[in-house]
Structures are given as structure tokens and as C-alpha cells.
Length: 239
Ligand code: CA
Image 1 (cartoon, rainbow, N blue to C red):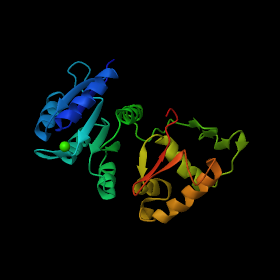
Image 2 (tube, protein in one colour):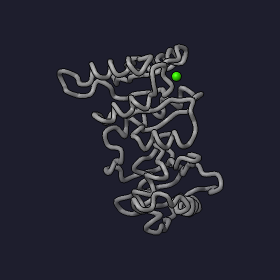
Image 3 (cartoon, rainbow, N blue to C red):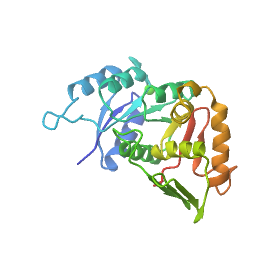
Image 4 (tube, protein in one colour):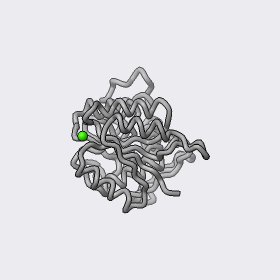
């Protein structure tokens, strides 16, 4: 089945480039150049009349649109659907990125980005589709690191690694979203609890401990990646 992507982007050149890349990759691409057009397309084709399934498998959303802010469209989509939304924007302040991720965006790409990176993020978002926490995910394997959540087992190069319960819970949260950025707030709420969402120093401490145990060179992490000012991302196992 061909996967359908709605691309909302007012920059004509970028729109053409991304559309071309999507088509080459085998996606079906529908484009919108404004908030109004995005709303119309999304509203009209919300559900497939036969299958009752959402008409789009993923949305690529620019924020600076001629008739408003893409963020409005994000809320429109989120109100009714779990369709993954990847924000593409020149805005790169931390506050904006965090706001969008907390508002339900699945990921963001700061312009300029490579087409290869966009396609990789799309694949990850589609795998997570409709199941953002992937409770069913129990394994992670990458660069000699094996993580088995069901058995509470972690090893590196065949050597078993002991993690404290909190270290394990933090790692498990990242494994369930592997490949996707998880904000500080999301990590703190899910691992420590809602009342701890401001305590980002916990995260720095525990991520340091996890890196010391899991990374070949903890000072230059290859798996437990920092998204500066935003949160952390466990490298996608297929990356
Ligand atoms: Ca724009």
C-alpha cells in the first residue's frame, strides 16, 4: 500500500524538492501551500470512505505559512487523529521546539536539513504511528549494546551491565521511543513523575551514568544523543 504524505510548505522550491524526494521514495505526496489549503485538504479527505482510515499516513508541516502559523494546523490534526506530524521549520529556538513536541508533534527538522535525514525521520515516525510509547517494544540492539526490557537485561559486547532501577526506567523510556526525540519534560514525567518535570539536573546526572555504562566513549555518545535544550534521543536501531 502506498503511504500518503501531506506536505505543507509555502516555499515553492523547497516544496518541489521535498515532493520529488517523497515520490522517489515511493510515497504518495499531496501538497498544500497555506494553512487554509492544508485545512481544506485535511478536512475533505479526513477519512477514506471505504476503510474509514485517515487519508494521510504522515504530515510534514512548515510553521511559517503565509496565512498563519503551522502550529494551528498541528492542533487541528491532533484533535482528531494520531497521524504523525513532523515539523519542518527555520525556527530553532528551544522553547518553540519543546512547545511543538509537547503539543504533539512527533519530531522536528530544522531547515536546512538533508533529504536523507527527512526520509529517515519519516520512517521512524511511521513505525511509531498510533503507538507513541510502543509498550510492545522490548528489544534494542545497536553497536554491541543489547537491551531486553522484558528480562531486565542490558549488556555491552557480551558483558552484562548492572543498572539501577531509575537508570533502567530512563533507558526503557528511550528504547520505547527509539529514534525519536523525547523532551526533558516527557522523560521526567514518565520516569520520576509529573511533580519532577522541572528537575532537569536529574536527567543530566542519570544520562551521564547511563553513558558511562553503555557508551564506548561516554564523552562522545553515539547512542544516547543529546538534543541541545530539548531532550534526548536514543539512536534508531536501524539508523
Ligand atoms: Ca514557510
